Every structure is written in structure tokens, then in C-alpha cells.
Image (cartoon, rainbow, N blue to C red; front, side, top):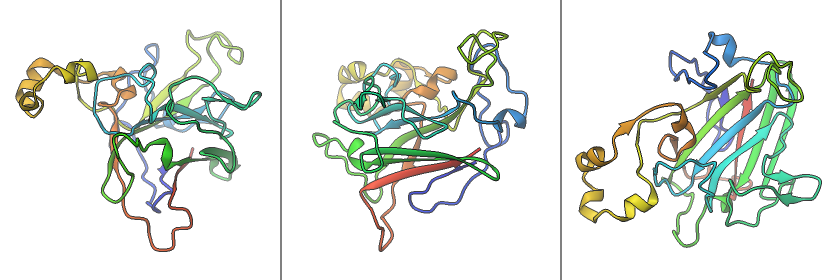
Length: 250
């Protein structure tokens, strides 16, 4: 179950094969049933987040696109952040808001907390809106703004070749389950888009002919394969409208 804390939305239970897609990843594993979406957190288990801040819907992989705002990150079972080096207090890598000089901490732009609860484990992460607002584009996360968004759970059952695995499988990852994996225009990159005329950009039939619609497992990590969220006006008395957060339970 996933629950969005920002805005007080009710939780939604996702059941693969019913109201959610069964993802064919990793390649050496298949989904065994509901038990594969409920698991015990170990050291390498995490929540994976993808943000297409400008909602450009391009076919770009967020592992390599170095998005200036948004991008691709992990929050592990303790709430630690994948792109922050605790030992040095510096940013580690460029897959997350590379144009922002952000920091991780209780009073900084990003913070996360993980804890055991009676039903399993609770994980919450908070992100300041400046991580997603591009001053040049002028996008503001205000009432009615649409932003590309994807979220996944990463389950490591310690059966792979890593330091915590038993070596019985070729990959550490047991199962990876994403909220969205939409049909996308293959090859519709920023460079390819810039070559089109305004008329061509608005011609869906032409775009589909030039960039065929596809869907497969790698789409989960792209802007165009992600889902979307719509921002609503903050309720009266919101204590901190400058921040957005996510919480989840396993």
C-alpha cells in the first residue's frame, strides 16, 4: 500500500494483475503472486522515485539524463537517500535535481525516516518544491500543475551475488514493482523533438508513425513511461506549503 501524505489522500491497495501491471523485471524472475508484493525489509530494500518535473514526456532514461530538476532516486529502508554521501555530507552522483545545490537532513531540502510498525515497516520521505521548479521554465507546483511521477518498491531477498546474498541467483534484486509503465513514443528524445515543426509536434498520427508506441520493462525508468500527478491547492492552514512528502507501508 502507498499513501501520499501531501494533501491527505487516502491509501490505495495495488494488486498486480488486477489494478496494476506485472513487470517483467529482473529478467530471471517472474511474479509468483501477491506474496511478491509483500515482503520483509532488508538492508538493500528501498523505494524508487522518478520525477519528470517539466512533464515533457520524452523517451529518456532517468539513470542517464541528469535531470536539472527531479530525476531518479532511491530512499532505503532507514530513510537514507541514494544520492547523498553521509560520510562527507555531499551529493553523490547526478541523477537527482542536478541544477540544485540541495542537502539531506531534518531541516534541509530532502529528508527520510524509516521505522518498524505493527503492520510491517513505515517509510516517509520529504522533498522541498525547489527540487522540481525550474526558474527558466517557470513551472510552479501550484493548483492544477501536472508532473510526471513514478514510484516503485525494490525487494532484495539476499539471494544474489552481492555482499549480503547467498549466491543462488544472478542478481541481488528479487523483484521490482513500479506503479506505472505507460505506452510511450520510442525514440522521442529532446533532440528529436527539436527537429520537428510546431505542426508536426501537434500531429499525433505523425508522431506515432515517426516514433512507434511501445511498452516494455525499461519504460518504467523514462519520463514518458511514468504516471502523472496533479497538484491541488494547499488546504487552509497548511503548516508548510513549501514542502511535499510521501509515506508508505509494506
